Length: 433
Ligand SMILES: [Zn+2]
Image (tube, rainbow, N blue to C red):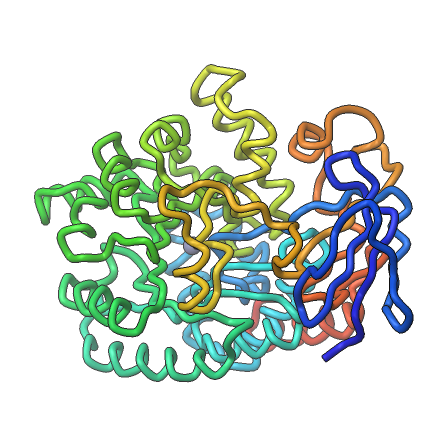
């Protein structure tokens, strides 16, 4: 356990405050709080103190494929580039790809993420070594058979991931409704309920997916998942671009979370964005994600937040479609408390009954927070949340703290050079560069 950490001279909602952390939690926060002897100290010098960002949908190790086949359409990109190299993936590739992703997330203010990728045990090791938090699931696919083997692998993955708690939470991650059989989806719902783990799935990303679902099952994607028992308070649905109002109402009623991935949607040219105003009207819990670096290609969630807000205003032809503070709340997981939870016990504690907001930087809360660069051109003038959404990018983050541990100070992520070199080596091994 590291020494207690004390921050002085930070700005919280415009007020100068001090903060002390012990054993991973914020034990004191306010204008009168000062360091105690023996504390590790940070002089914040007027740096804004804010909640960290939560990336609700990633395939972290795909940093290894950054820029690879990036100008191809989706199916050619997958068939000609991604699937052939993924067939050669080893656990060490995933470990170093994820370490690279974690370094980028620490640099740009993300402290939790929801991941779906091969060798999830290697992802978990990387997350722990980096000092971050994540909910991780190995992808489930059985479009060409192998359902029983997939179940056995999924159970083995859950057991392995359980050994990495509490920093790492476990999820079952069926890839999508068009790559996973009805039987395996039902099994996923039952097993997730039995084990108290989360479910993470891509849903309603393309119009073709909706059309095929209607043809095969006579239902739209969210209604189909609901019939299989897959929609609940521990379910994360990535994308949701083509959800209609009836689906959004159903998702809200079940308490599931939808994660918007606007940059990946635009890069893969799916032709739309999550209908956020309708989702809000329905009361859906909404988060923000980058998707994998293979299809984004950045993990800087603050940059994606600007795209999210702009695309919503643009699509709605309404400049009032999403206020900046609301956009910020979405990026920090305040509108989807599930995204901030890791352990199953935490899931029950943190979920408010009606999906209200949870204030992240508070006395008694986890000691996870950011200090932003004071006196910067992006934040020096204007209203903080508006500046954060529209003027800043992840480079505005000066200090990243998780569980009272300082993971970055002064914009420097320790060990970055080695991480980049090792990831580049693994990428070369796979024949990427
Ligand atoms: Zn994805």
